[in-house]
Image (tube, rainbow, N blue to C red; front, side, top):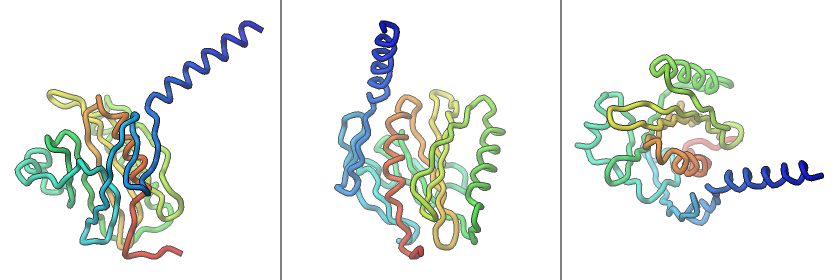
Length: 198
């Protein structure tokens, strides 16, 4: 009996550790709870008003001079928000074209392989999709080494009218758990105003 009792204690302790980053989704009330802290949300629209999404209030449009530094590639996201210092950023773009059944999963798999090719020492972390049907959001992440830090780079994808919604979230590896938990909650708030799904 004693070993079984000890195993139960170990299981309980492990479960408590997993619960250290408790998440409560109150997005319908305008906030989420991450690591016992309340994060206020704002409803924002982007891509010419087609997409509406709740995002943390602390993420505001990134200044143009900071965009040039953080996203020097001309093929940067169409819509970028960040915290005041630019340490956490969220970018969104629309890849135009028709999406067929199964296309998104194939696209995600191709991009995962490409990111793995570009960063062979980084492990791809596959997350469970958020939502159902055409509103399902696929996402994955990897840690990318920088000159002075390690960046957690998250990519997410969702079918919308006229194409594929593609987004990225970048933050320090130290804040990875918090921001991935926050993102998991807000991905379900994405709405496409131009499409009424059956």
